[in-house]
Length: 486
Image (cartoon, rainbow, N blue to C red; front, side, top):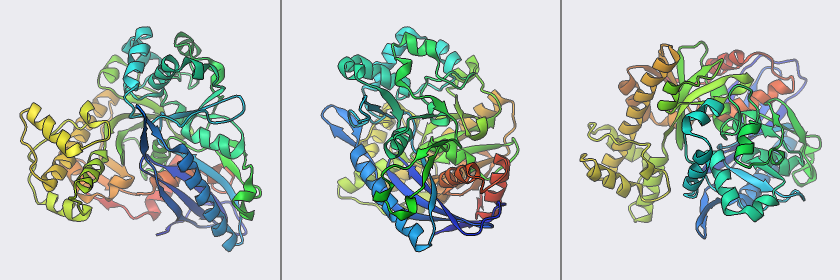
């Protein structure tokens, strides 16, 4: 259903429409925002499935299918705008981080982009760490170690496919790749680029020494640009309808977590955010990065957010474990209703806590069987049925949040008084309640549409329809979105 907000706008004679292309690892959406002098209304125009596919020995994204779904959604968005006698002013794109496409000198996508869960990344880790020790690397880029970070993917790419790599003209992260295909203009949006491991944490730009030592030609990377910049005008706009005759693509916080954090309805410095979906991104917003041995040892990362903020956070596993379990049960002929499952799980006591970040849970597969194997290996009580597996997953997620909150307070020297959960996980009442109990903190859940809100509001501000600081945007979200307190 549409979500309405009331904001402080520059006077506008009629509703103007902004579009968000919001992509996740399992689904994507096209969202319309009708912006007038005193109101903004979000409407989901088109939703489509997304996911990785096994091609030979590699795990890839079906990027051609993804782009076709986006174009279908843009046609629907154009119809939506025309029915309101309006134009689509701008499009903003956000997606998951770290993955990329390779573009040749003719501007063509050379191969389908690899998925970050591809096992080849482990060879990339070895190659990079032959050149940089983990502590040296952290001092440069400030990033939490994750074997799927772009730096490791590119090292593996170059080693395995030197002939292909030699023909690459540009490496573009997924939102930048989409922006390039829509406008013909190449840029590297800063918030997403900060997840690659290739940016210097102090300069917020590509680190030439790092690229050089890894034999990654700096010319293969488009210039870093900030959110709010205009990438370019939509080309071939006639395919999508008359409403796109002068539409531009505006850079937003293109890492979906950057947009989600921009959409967190909290101000001050005593809150922690938890962007909850496939992954759990838990952290605080800082003015400067923390690049210490203590933060490295605890695997905290420094990524960039809207308005130059540092998103100091820990990347934890999320509801991926539950979604993979649901998929496995369905494939085994034992499909589960999620709401009934959560109700049954709520009635159970806490029994088993697993390490949700264990490497055995990263790749797609039969998650309940992997949880059983983990429990047997670690002498834990084995969940016996779907309800117990569900309770185990949610208890374990909440426990991981409690540990991370304690670490966050130690590293930042800040006291956290509340956790703001946004995204899909904000609708999981059991997870929210267990998180409140495990951390001993107030949990404020919502909005579920934080990512889309962050995307749209950055566009509206860039086009002078909306005024104010990031805090102003957050106050509006807090005032006009229904929030649930646990």
